[in-house]
Image 1 (tube, rainbow, N blue to C red):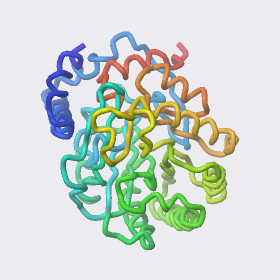
Image 2 (image 1 turned 45 degrees about the vertical axis):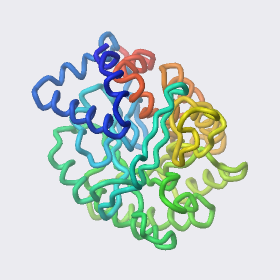
Image 3 (image 1 turned 90 degrees about the vertical axis):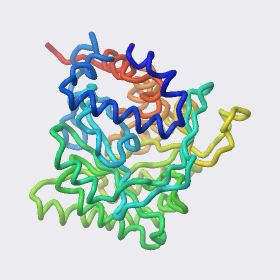
Length: 346
């Protein structure tokens, strides 16, 4: 209800300005001791959703916040107060970088969609970890890692290894982002040869870190929806071969088929929101068949309602995440999904 009143004001701003203002407001509310306002804004009557165990981790419920909303881990406590079963922050890179030139976010309200070409804008991994150290949140925290824009693709694995080693002691799980369309040539890392080499290196580093820290932190790979017919099978085989712990499907799409003719539709970047829903769900379905239970799928992309979330779970996802739906619908979407998820047993 509160968000529905605030949304016209926020949507009157530039999207990136609105994004930063809304998050700063949530943080102010939480820090003022009014976290109950966040919790009650969309969760009234939601009931206790069933806890789930995925990648060896205990999630209080199956709904998470996708990476990208809180790139630097600045708003973890405020976002956690809203009822998410897990929070994923990032994408973070080894060194700070400004991202692509502004403007770089665009709303397509007729399609309930966003286009962004942010380009991994973040303050670097050390800054993110300082923020994580200050948070009171003790729930499931995913940290999404990427490469710096000026690191040659041939040396991308070095950036991922650096980030993995840095975030490992502080993360519940680590997501390897090889699928953003906004970093030049990044999606090449989804090719069979490149992905196999990267997965092998990261698995070796993961096992070394597990021995060093005395705890095993799962790794998930985040993939694009824009794959050719052969790629899902090749990616699934690579994940199983290298014993990667999970896959997140999907990132944003470069397709504009569903938004042709709309204002901003021709802006470069990744398209998210309702137009991505069906492609993401179909890829989840394909991966579920190919993986046959070997590793879990986290479904994300176009979750604008409880029905969308349930469709991803029915297609084979074990967990779901939201981002653009949260921007369009606010906390009400969280409550709606939690009410629709299987309830905890009394």
